Image (cartoon, rainbow over all chains, first blue to last red):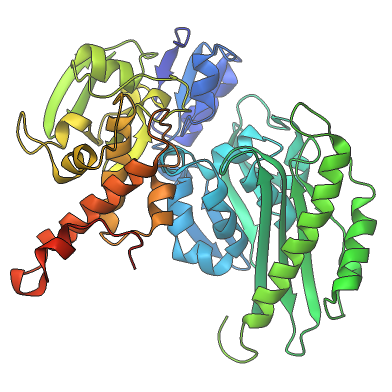
Length: 294
Length: 177
C-alpha cells in the first residue's frame, strides 16, 4: 500500500498550474487527496507528477455574486458545511455535506475535488446537477465554464481537458423567500457510498403553491440525473400529484446494476426517496413564514 | 525533498521522498509510533492526527504537503512523559480499549470534538468517531469514555461552589443535554 514514485510540484499561481498540466499528460492535480491518495496507494493511479493546487489563493473562498454563490474549488467540505453564506443561500449543499465521507475526510476533502472526481453516487455533484450549477474552469487560454450536467459525463468521467483545472462552482441562488430542501440517501453504512440519493428544492408562494422546483438523483445512473417535474409548478404539492409526477419522470431513469443493488431496486428506491425528499422540501418551505426575511 | 514540519509544538526537518505519507514520515523519520498504520488507504482511521486542531487521516496526505500546519499526534496530548490526559485516562477507566490499535485515532478524533463542545450529545460523539474503526469494543465503552471525559472536563472548568456533589460530577452522563 505505498504509492509509486512521483514528482511533487506546488505551483505559485493558477496559470503556472495549468501550464504544468498542459505540458505533461502524466501530471495530475492533487487538492484534498481524499480519493486520489487511496488510488495512488493501491496503484490504481500512477501519475508521473502531482500538481498541488490546494494553497493557490485563486481557488479559495466563498463569494456572493448576483443570483449565485461562487464556491472556490479548494474550499474544504468541512468549511462549506459550517459556512453561514452557504447555509443561507445554497441550503441544499449545506444539507448534503454531513453525508459526504466522515469528519476527518471532510476536513481535507474539497468541494471542487468531489466535482472533478465525478463519482456517480457522490452528493456534491448531485447538488450541482440538481440546482443547475456552473463549473468554472481554469485553462491555458483563460477562464471557461459549463453547466454541471454537461461537465459530468459518466462514472469518474468529466469533459475536462489536459491543462484544465476546476477553479470554482457557481451555485445559483433562488430569489424566492419560501425555499425548502429535502435529502435522503440509502447506503450500507452511514457515510458510505450511496446506492441511491435524492435531493429536492422547492419554492412556494404565499398561498403555498409551488413556484419553482428542482429534483435530482445520485447513484442510480452513471452520473447524477435531474428529473423533470415542472408539471408541479403552479399547484399545491399534494401527495397524489407529487407521486404521479415523480413516477412519470422516473420511468425514463437509466438505472445501473452492480454488486450492491439491481437496476430495478435502484429505480424503485429512487422513486420512494424522491417522493420523501420533495415532501421534506415542501414541508420545510411551508414552515418559512409568509412575511419576513428568507 | 526537504520538508519542515511543526509537530507537537516543535519544529522539525527531514528529507522525504514525495510519495512518503505523513503517516510513514511520523513513524519512520520522527519515531512517533503512537500514530498507527492500519489500512493505509483512508478507511480505518487508526492514523488520525490533528492538523491545526482538526482530525485528518495521515495516510491520505504526503509529508511534503504538511508544512505550515500545526500537527498534533497522540504523543502531543499527554501533559508530561508517562502521564495521561483526561481523555486518555477516561479510556482506561471505562475500558474504552482492548487491543489499543484504534485508540490513538479515537482519542484524537474525540479530543478535537471536545475542543468544540464539552456537552456533546451521543450523536455528536458517534459522528466524531464515525471514521474510526474498532474491532474489539463494539464502540459502547469508547462512547462511554468520551462522555466520561466530557463530564470531567466540564467540572474542571467550573468553580467548586457550582460543581454539585462529587459523585454526580464523576458519573458518566448517559445523555448529555
